[in-house]
Image (tube, rainbow, N blue to C red; front, top):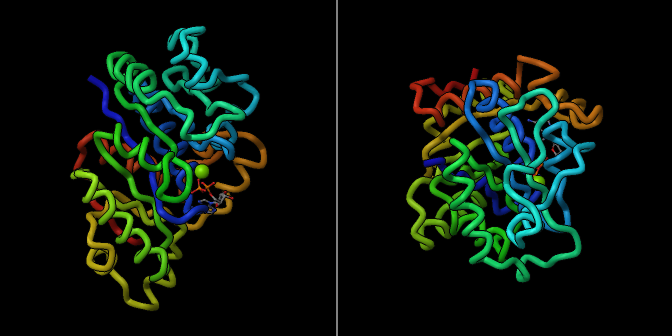
Length: 245
Ligand SMILES: Nc1ncnc2c1ncn2[C@@H]1O[C@H](COP(=O)(O)OP(=O)(O)O)[C@@H](O)[C@H]1O
Ligand SMILES: [Mg+2]
């Protein structure tokens, strides 16, 4: 049975889509069957971060409405184990047929090892749909105090929803700044009140890869790409330590 992972944050622009694409690609490189679903209806852009902007991908709505089969989900041009369903156009999150979507996810669980839901910003309907189906939540936050506090509040909200497996990814960190301020991984966990799944550095390659419509891991093995690979291995259950350096 595959595992359903929702990539969430309260704040927008924390790097959900970039982390979702990086970690999903890493898992596919590691030999896992992975399905990414863009749930950011209206502002969808996971196709770009995956390097699949030209894939003409089916939307999850086209599949759950029955016109297409899950086996027709777009296949990544470099990583055949990575598949993708985009978000439907011209559709409010409230219009999503939850029962039909749930049925699609049940089917996906039987065909893939990992299914990623890339959520929209905010804590409204799209957030709730993604959280409600998730076996595990990755909360993506920036490293500044306001972002960590925001993540902590979002974590509380997820706790109220009964979500137990919630882990934090701190994105866009500047290791030198952490060294100067003498901040440790434990400090971040204490502030957020959540366990850490990983730390991703600020890395110009994230923007460059998206600009050239390539996947981050197809462009580089260092920096944010290496961090995504470590997160992927932790998701697989490997004991890879989290360190800021
Ligand atoms: N680690 C990183 N280093 C540099 N830029 C990043 C990093 N993560 C995300 N970005 C950039 O930040 C912006 C927002 O990222 P995105 O993944 O779209 O966030 P979200 O999905 O949370 O809105 C994008 O321009 C992206 O390229
Ligand atoms: Mg996004």
